[in-house]
Length: 285
Image (cartoon, rainbow, N blue to C red; front, side, top):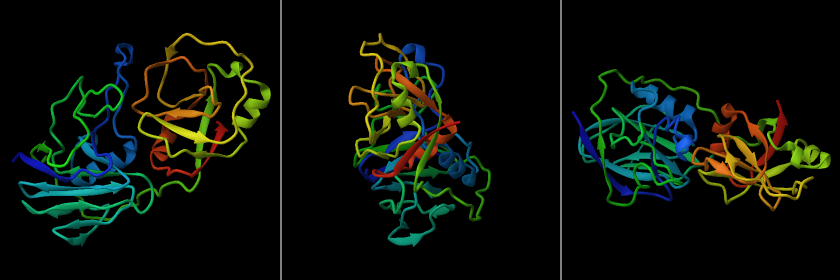
Protein backbone atom coordinates (compact mmCIF):
# COMPACT_ATOMS: atom_id res chain seq x y z
CA UNK A 1 0.00 0.00 0.00
CA UNK A 2 1.35 3.40 -0.96
CA UNK A 3 1.07 6.35 1.40
CA UNK A 4 1.98 9.94 2.19
CA UNK A 5 4.47 11.50 4.57
CA UNK A 6 3.79 14.96 6.02
CA UNK A 7 6.69 17.12 7.16
CA UNK A 8 5.91 18.38 10.67
CA UNK A 9 9.37 19.89 11.21
CA UNK A 10 11.77 20.23 8.28
CA UNK A 11 14.90 20.99 10.31
CA UNK A 12 17.94 22.94 9.14
CA UNK A 13 18.28 21.07 5.84
CA UNK A 14 16.43 17.87 4.96
CA UNK A 15 16.59 16.56 1.39
CA UNK A 16 15.56 13.49 -0.57
CA UNK A 17 18.59 11.44 -1.64
CA UNK A 18 19.36 8.15 -3.35
CA UNK A 19 22.42 6.89 -5.27
CA UNK A 20 22.45 10.02 -7.44
CA UNK A 21 22.67 10.89 -11.14
CA UNK A 22 25.63 9.18 -12.72
CA UNK A 23 26.69 9.83 -16.29
CA UNK A 24 25.39 13.38 -16.80
CA UNK A 25 28.47 15.50 -16.02
CA UNK A 26 28.83 16.31 -19.72
CA UNK A 27 25.46 18.07 -19.42
CA UNK A 28 26.64 20.09 -16.41
CA UNK A 29 24.71 17.88 -13.95
CA UNK A 30 26.64 16.68 -10.88
CA UNK A 31 26.05 13.26 -9.35
CA UNK A 32 24.30 14.45 -6.18
CA UNK A 33 23.00 11.58 -4.00
CA UNK A 34 23.53 10.71 -0.33
CA UNK A 35 26.81 12.10 1.00
CA UNK A 36 27.16 9.13 3.37
CA UNK A 37 26.14 6.45 0.89
CA UNK A 38 27.14 3.50 3.14
CA UNK A 39 24.79 4.80 5.86
CA UNK A 40 21.93 5.15 3.36
CA UNK A 41 22.46 1.62 2.05
CA UNK A 42 22.71 0.05 5.48
CA UNK A 43 19.48 1.74 6.63
CA UNK A 44 17.72 0.48 3.50
CA UNK A 45 19.05 -3.06 3.90
CA UNK A 46 17.73 -3.18 7.46
CA UNK A 47 14.27 -2.50 6.02
CA UNK A 48 14.48 -4.96 3.14
CA UNK A 49 14.46 -2.02 0.69
CA UNK A 50 16.59 -1.78 -2.41
CA UNK A 51 19.95 -0.49 -1.07
CA UNK A 52 19.63 2.69 -3.16
CA UNK A 53 15.95 3.44 -2.41
CA UNK A 54 15.35 7.15 -1.78
CA UNK A 55 15.71 8.28 1.83
CA UNK A 56 15.72 11.59 3.71
CA UNK A 57 19.10 13.11 4.57
CA UNK A 58 18.94 15.47 7.57
CA UNK A 59 21.56 18.00 8.66
CA UNK A 60 22.43 18.56 12.34
CA UNK A 61 18.93 19.29 13.67
CA UNK A 62 16.94 16.32 12.33
CA UNK A 63 13.28 16.53 11.30
CA UNK A 64 9.80 15.34 12.30
CA UNK A 65 7.44 13.38 10.04
CA UNK A 66 3.89 12.00 10.14
CA UNK A 67 2.95 9.05 7.86
CA UNK A 68 -0.69 8.44 6.90
CA UNK A 69 -0.15 4.67 7.03
CA UNK A 70 1.84 2.44 9.33
CA UNK A 71 5.44 2.27 8.16
CA UNK A 72 8.69 0.72 9.35
CA UNK A 73 11.63 3.12 9.48
CA UNK A 74 15.33 3.11 10.27
CA UNK A 75 17.17 6.25 11.36
CA UNK A 76 20.93 5.83 10.86
CA UNK A 77 24.05 7.77 9.93
CA UNK A 78 24.83 10.39 12.57
CA UNK A 79 23.52 9.23 15.97
CA UNK A 80 20.56 11.15 17.39
CA UNK A 81 17.57 10.67 19.71
CA UNK A 82 14.48 9.24 17.99
CA UNK A 83 10.91 9.24 19.29
CA UNK A 84 7.58 7.95 18.00
CA UNK A 85 4.49 9.70 19.42
CA UNK A 86 6.78 11.20 22.08
CA UNK A 87 8.23 7.89 23.25
CA UNK A 88 11.94 7.04 22.80
CA UNK A 89 12.66 4.31 20.24
CA UNK A 90 15.79 2.72 18.83
CA UNK A 91 18.24 4.56 16.61
CA UNK A 92 19.94 2.43 13.94
CA UNK A 93 17.34 -0.36 13.96
CA UNK A 94 13.89 -0.95 12.41
CA UNK A 95 11.06 0.82 14.25
CA UNK A 96 7.31 0.65 13.54
CA UNK A 97 5.54 4.01 13.22
CA UNK A 98 1.72 3.78 13.39
CA UNK A 99 -0.45 5.75 10.97
CA UNK A 100 -0.77 9.34 12.17
CA UNK A 101 2.02 9.12 14.76
CA UNK A 102 4.89 11.62 14.66
CA UNK A 103 8.39 10.30 14.09
CA UNK A 104 10.79 12.85 15.58
CA UNK A 105 14.45 12.64 14.55
CA UNK A 106 16.32 14.82 17.03
CA UNK A 107 19.54 16.84 16.80
CA UNK A 108 22.69 14.82 16.19
CA UNK A 109 24.82 13.89 19.19
CA UNK A 110 27.84 13.37 16.92
CA UNK A 111 28.48 13.78 13.20
CA UNK A 112 26.42 15.87 10.80
CA UNK A 113 23.95 13.89 8.67
CA UNK A 114 21.31 11.36 9.73
CA UNK A 115 19.38 9.21 7.26
CA UNK A 116 15.68 8.37 7.54
CA UNK A 117 14.85 5.26 5.51
CA UNK A 118 11.20 4.25 5.19
CA UNK A 119 9.73 0.93 4.12
CA UNK A 120 9.34 1.08 0.33
CA UNK A 121 11.28 4.35 0.06
CA UNK A 122 10.34 7.94 -0.79
CA UNK A 123 8.54 7.92 -4.14
CA UNK A 124 9.00 11.42 -5.57
CA UNK A 125 9.27 11.48 -9.36
CA UNK A 126 12.78 10.73 -10.69
CA UNK A 127 14.64 13.39 -12.70
CA UNK A 128 17.36 12.07 -15.01
CA UNK A 129 17.07 8.70 -13.31
CA UNK A 130 17.37 9.88 -9.71
CA UNK A 131 15.11 11.20 -6.95
CA UNK A 132 17.95 13.16 -5.33
CA UNK A 133 17.81 16.84 -4.44
CA UNK A 134 20.69 18.69 -6.09
CA UNK A 135 21.36 21.96 -4.28
CA UNK A 136 23.63 23.34 -7.01
CA UNK A 137 21.55 22.76 -10.15
CA UNK A 138 18.13 22.72 -8.50
CA UNK A 139 17.20 19.35 -10.00
CA UNK A 140 15.00 17.01 -7.98
CA UNK A 141 12.64 17.96 -5.15
CA UNK A 142 13.32 21.14 -3.20
CA UNK A 143 14.66 20.85 0.36
CA UNK A 144 11.80 20.05 2.71
CA UNK A 145 9.73 22.78 4.32
CA UNK A 146 7.23 22.48 7.14
CA UNK A 147 3.97 21.11 5.76
CA UNK A 148 5.46 19.46 2.66
CA UNK A 149 3.93 16.09 1.74
CA UNK A 150 5.99 13.32 0.14
CA UNK A 151 4.69 10.13 -1.49
CA UNK A 152 5.74 6.77 -0.04
CA UNK A 153 6.19 3.68 -2.19
CA UNK A 154 4.55 0.40 -1.21
CA UNK A 155 6.74 -1.79 1.02
CA UNK A 156 8.79 -4.39 -0.82
CA UNK A 157 7.31 -7.27 1.16
CA UNK A 158 10.77 -8.31 2.34
CA UNK A 159 11.03 -8.49 6.11
CA UNK A 160 13.01 -5.92 8.07
CA UNK A 161 16.02 -7.26 9.97
CA UNK A 162 15.32 -6.70 13.70
CA UNK A 163 18.94 -6.93 14.86
CA UNK A 164 21.49 -4.38 15.99
CA UNK A 165 24.36 -3.73 13.59
CA UNK A 166 27.54 -1.70 14.06
CA UNK A 167 27.37 1.82 12.62
CA UNK A 168 30.65 3.67 11.91
CA UNK A 169 31.29 6.48 14.36
CA UNK A 170 31.76 10.01 12.98
CA UNK A 171 35.48 10.75 12.59
CA UNK A 172 37.46 12.30 15.44
CA UNK A 173 40.10 13.01 12.78
CA UNK A 174 39.38 13.02 9.05
CA UNK A 175 42.16 11.27 7.13
CA UNK A 176 41.71 11.70 3.38
CA UNK A 177 43.83 9.53 1.03
CA UNK A 178 44.73 11.51 -2.10
CA UNK A 179 46.49 11.18 -5.42
CA UNK A 180 48.30 14.30 -6.58
CA UNK A 181 47.25 15.96 -9.82
CA UNK A 182 46.16 17.01 -12.31
CA UNK A 183 47.41 20.53 -11.43
CA UNK A 184 49.90 19.75 -8.66
CA UNK A 185 52.59 21.43 -10.78
CA UNK A 186 50.83 24.76 -10.21
CA UNK A 187 52.06 24.69 -6.59
CA UNK A 188 55.51 25.11 -5.07
CA UNK A 189 57.38 22.10 -3.62
CA UNK A 190 56.91 23.65 -0.18
CA UNK A 191 53.14 23.86 -0.77
CA UNK A 192 53.01 20.19 -1.75
CA UNK A 193 54.86 19.26 1.45
CA UNK A 194 52.48 21.41 3.47
CA UNK A 195 49.44 19.88 1.79
CA UNK A 196 50.45 16.32 2.76
CA UNK A 197 51.84 17.10 6.23
CA UNK A 198 49.99 20.03 7.79
CA UNK A 199 46.95 19.79 10.05
CA UNK A 200 43.81 21.37 8.60
CA UNK A 201 40.35 21.71 10.16
CA UNK A 202 36.83 21.36 8.72
CA UNK A 203 35.40 24.82 8.12
CA UNK A 204 31.87 25.65 9.33
CA UNK A 205 31.24 26.93 5.78
CA UNK A 206 31.27 23.36 4.40
CA UNK A 207 28.13 22.05 2.69
CA UNK A 208 26.93 19.43 0.20
CA UNK A 209 28.92 21.14 -2.56
CA UNK A 210 32.29 21.01 -0.84
CA UNK A 211 34.15 20.41 2.40
CA UNK A 212 36.06 23.62 3.05
CA UNK A 213 39.16 23.63 5.22
CA UNK A 214 40.94 26.04 7.54
CA UNK A 215 44.72 25.95 7.88
CA UNK A 216 47.91 26.98 6.10
CA UNK A 217 47.54 28.48 2.65
CA UNK A 218 49.14 26.68 -0.29
CA UNK A 219 51.46 28.84 -2.38
CA UNK A 220 51.19 28.66 -6.14
CA UNK A 221 54.19 28.25 -8.41
CA UNK A 222 52.11 29.68 -11.25
CA UNK A 223 50.17 32.92 -10.93
CA UNK A 224 48.25 32.48 -14.17
CA UNK A 225 44.61 31.51 -14.56
CA UNK A 226 43.24 28.25 -15.89
CA UNK A 227 40.39 28.00 -18.37
CA UNK A 228 37.48 26.11 -16.86
CA UNK A 229 38.00 22.36 -16.95
CA UNK A 230 36.12 19.29 -15.81
CA UNK A 231 35.77 18.56 -12.09
CA UNK A 232 35.22 15.16 -10.51
CA UNK A 233 33.87 13.98 -7.18
CA UNK A 234 36.64 14.24 -4.58
CA UNK A 235 38.65 16.86 -6.49
CA UNK A 236 40.67 19.08 -4.12
CA UNK A 237 40.46 22.56 -5.59
CA UNK A 238 42.53 25.43 -4.23
CA UNK A 239 40.84 28.85 -4.53
CA UNK A 240 42.76 32.16 -4.27
CA UNK A 241 42.87 32.05 -0.44
CA UNK A 242 45.04 28.92 -0.71
CA UNK A 243 42.85 26.67 1.52
CA UNK A 244 41.89 23.32 -0.04
CA UNK A 245 38.24 22.56 -0.82
CA UNK A 246 37.16 18.92 -1.30
CA UNK A 247 34.33 18.63 -3.82
CA UNK A 248 31.39 16.57 -2.57
CA UNK A 249 28.30 15.24 -4.36
CA UNK A 250 26.68 18.55 -5.40
CA UNK A 251 29.95 19.97 -6.78
CA UNK A 252 30.11 21.98 -10.03
CA UNK A 253 31.13 19.94 -13.05
CA UNK A 254 33.63 22.57 -14.25
CA UNK A 255 35.93 25.01 -12.50
CA UNK A 256 38.88 27.31 -13.08
CA UNK A 257 40.87 26.98 -9.86
CA UNK A 258 43.70 24.41 -9.92
CA UNK A 259 43.05 20.91 -8.55
CA UNK A 260 46.04 19.85 -6.48
CA UNK A 261 44.79 16.29 -5.84
CA UNK A 262 41.79 13.96 -5.81
CA UNK A 263 40.45 12.20 -2.70
CA UNK A 264 39.68 8.49 -2.92
CA UNK A 265 35.89 8.21 -3.25
CA UNK A 266 35.58 5.61 -0.46
CA UNK A 267 36.87 8.22 2.03
CA UNK A 268 34.15 10.76 1.26
CA UNK A 269 31.49 9.13 3.47
CA UNK A 270 33.56 10.06 6.52
CA UNK A 271 33.87 13.60 5.16
CA UNK A 272 30.06 13.81 5.15
CA UNK A 273 30.03 13.25 8.92
CA UNK A 274 32.97 15.49 9.91
CA UNK A 275 31.81 18.38 12.09
CA UNK A 276 33.24 21.89 11.96
CA UNK A 277 36.63 21.96 13.67
CA UNK A 278 37.41 18.28 13.01
CA UNK A 279 41.15 17.86 12.22
CA UNK A 280 41.84 16.97 8.57
CA UNK A 281 44.95 15.35 7.11
CA UNK A 282 45.63 14.71 3.42
CA UNK A 283 47.70 11.55 2.98
CA UNK A 284 49.27 10.26 -0.22
CA UNK A 285 47.88 6.81 -0.92
